[in-house]
Length: 474
Image (cartoon, rainbow, N blue to C red):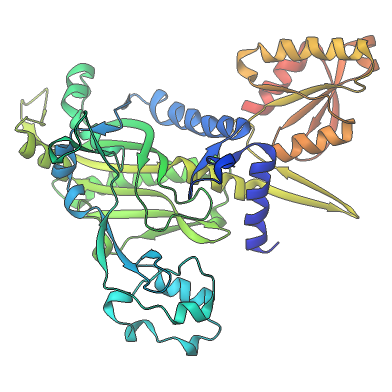
């Protein structure tokens, strides 16, 4: 299917089935605000829990942190965010829309009828290079933009602490989760007695006042991150830190393919050019995914050197060094930072696993989600909902499965006929459907249907939990 059509179908499925709703919907919404519905919050939590288990609980060298959303504003001064965390902004004098000044050519190529009707990049004035098209999707309007000069726009959300709203009470919602892990480095080190190399991990919300958010949940002003700051000994040669960098690169790729089930055909590794590196980075690699709207960043991997710890040590006056337990030598560790976007992971998983199967005039839509990520692991229903004995037996089986820790959550579905229930569960990604019929009453067996193959097998009730566990966790 066409990529634009795929995106429209995914957005429609998300609202129709309860994955993602427009924020503040009954009041007309709020620009680029989204709420995760009953199924969406399950999928999102499954992603975060799987990540936490793999990268924190299953490793001896990583510990967790859950820090406040609002920190002392001096943190953001020391980190460089107050001075440098900005995007170039330009305003159209005709429609008064404001845009980022670094997506211009993409917009031109999308909307201009003929490439000969617009100047080439080298011929564009500096103050409009990178102009993003405004909300008026009209090539003529694009060509007639009357733009003011580009200005730097700081992306941090400003707020005030306390009853007064003056400069002394200014604070910011965090634009990233990383800084708390640097600020709490000494406390974590003192309480855990970890030896280098070790990491601090955090999941949580971050806020950026994006000039041009969009593409559904891909770029939003409120989003969630999963990050690790991995502290390593001071390298003597580049090969020292490159070794850790490569290990994390392999871990990210394994997460992408093994845990999320994304195809490497849709993944592109981008070595960020030196001139485009963030102020703290000596090397950054982006892991991009081929979304329906283009190849865009999914994850990042950066070598931050000792930039952050040194800056916070200097600004706070507090020592943020690591003491070697064998030599007593004090050093400021360097940092490798792998970063995962939760919302972008959510969207990539939906894009990857949305399937349509055409059989003559019939079309089946299903999400081929890895069972560990699926909102429901299985669904239970009676063959006929007007037969009390079938309903009672199905309820009994449902209750047993729902109370079993390894299988939560389990869906109950008695709407319509069995075929419609299969269709509904397929569309939300439920891996297995369990039907209770009259044979169940006679021999304690149920029909288990596989979502991806639509194949059905009979399973004894006393073997059902083990069967499902093997399929889900195997």
